[in-house]
Image 1 (tube, rainbow, N blue to C red):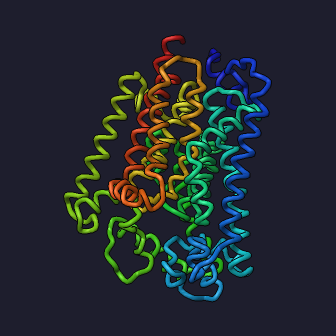
Image 2: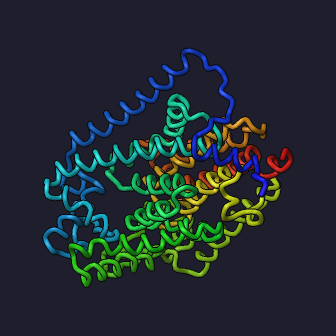
Length: 455
């Protein structure tokens, strides 16, 4: 059988990190500038978060330690043999795995445990940003040197810096979801079983990573899909080592049973059902719940969500057709490892994350921190010079995203405007528009029709 030289090139690029992008000479000041700016962003983040933690005051531990108080309370209750879904102020609402994993630091007491959790977050975000930036560069054939990777991280941080600061201040767990998505993309081609396990771990903290399952099935990534299913079950059962089978199964039932109330604000008496906040939800279902009333349970609101999803998918499909890029034909299995599919997969992976945020009724402003990976995809696409599709749509999309995430500004003067913007889920509509610009520019720069025209 005659070897395919194009496939051989792809193989070397995948395994050896062959830098096929041209390395144009850089100005001598660029390296120091990038590293200085990145260090400045890190110092600013560290100072902001440390000042809040060291200066924490409030009438209750819940006000002082924010969301981590709920995680800690669940872990503490598990240690004491109490009901984890009756612990905390607002209530622990997650699968039992998070409380199980936090039991060791729960023995330290709340203040020390909060510092330990912050250390975990720093490690998680550092790994997610570094590994994510390298993987995006690899998939788009960009240089893998430290300067290029740090430059991508810096620009992606600037796109979403406010959400990262808010996430760290609130002591949430969305960084683990980000890392799950990053590792899933990194291992998708070369370690599909690990890809599925990474996504499965995230699914047992929050459910967003499960959106990858239909994508993996459609793309005939059987090992990754199977590993995701098996891994989700295995991680869900892991706390049984401490809790016992009966208690663990009860907790799993209550945690996943809360999914049935995701679009409801109705009190059920079950702590696991209190998963949707009509005041802070920023997704399309949350907007529908507010706009049509009755906590999103009406046929009209459900129809509206389906209509928005259908129109959005049709718009994305139209972009594939316009860019002459196959959505299903010539895709799947081994074809996903040959150029230009690796870059297109990265674009589609970003789309999965954005759709998960846009259509999950739980989404609030802190969840938007996982846009760091789609942000790296967007910034990398502006550096791809293989084909000169116009960058202006994507630049406009990035401006719209930043404006939608940060405006109107906070403070008493604009409080009413902020409330109105949140009530219409404004940041989510901006995010959806942004992804269409990523898709348009991305498929124009790395799209299938460009490769076939030159092959």
